[in-house]
Length: 140
Image 1 (cartoon, one colour):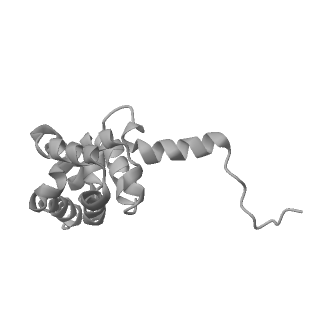
Image 2 (cartoon, helix red, strand yellow; image 1 turned 180 degrees about the vertical axis):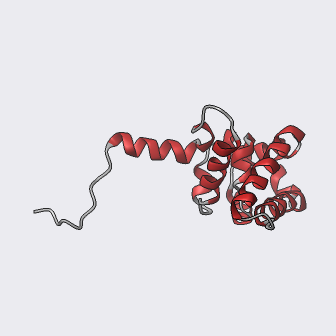
């Protein structure tokens, strides 16, 4: 007898969708509107330190994924992340066009919070500073 308060099991397709979104959140949109890119950034921002390692390394070359990183995530990647993740992060930092996209996304995220806040800009600036300050950890 099944208890009414028990939750139903996920269908295989639902489970695969969740796994895909964890691995490749940047592939969840077709057109690159700021709204869609911002949705990906929010999705990444919600990930904890261990879940961030589920993102495919190529995702860290995408502005929307980078825009969702938090300092706790970047510290975890520096300490336990594979070399490929670190290489991708260095590459996106060196790409002015991608970084322009990152700041476009975090600006839109800040606008969601109110016109006078820089919470997301400050968060991403801390992530960038952490990578630069710990450059050695991202080279090996």
